[in-house]
Image (spheres, rainbow, N blue to C red):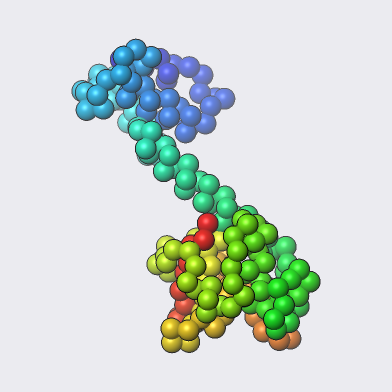
Length: 190
């Protein structure tokens, strides 16, 4: 089994690149014939793998999952960045941007602009889109729907740290504010 991947200079490679090289090397037995993933590794290989960070990718399936997570986080960042661009724009009932917004018009506009995803112009209807996510698992870019009972009454975009971007109400402007209600749902659209 080849361990020469670790002897190459790692200053120009990121930890993920080295981990990926070692992971594929473990599965394929270096550049030679593929070996079973359950084959007993040599002692020097075990020591080398233990020295790598915890996020070692050892199979193509793991690499794909990691890439999908990274793409989702990047998309979430684009959504939050687009939301922040509209800070200070005035609230107007029924408006869907780009100069004025109501709450669901704001989320509709931001998701369309940042991801191409189309949403209806009602908070109650928006809560049916995407995938339900536990509040503890919310990540920036997720859709927040504040509810009265089970009816969605306000929409925003999760910004992290218990805050969201939204167009709150008449007389206010688009801003990042604390999620003020305990009765809300999180929907993952990206």
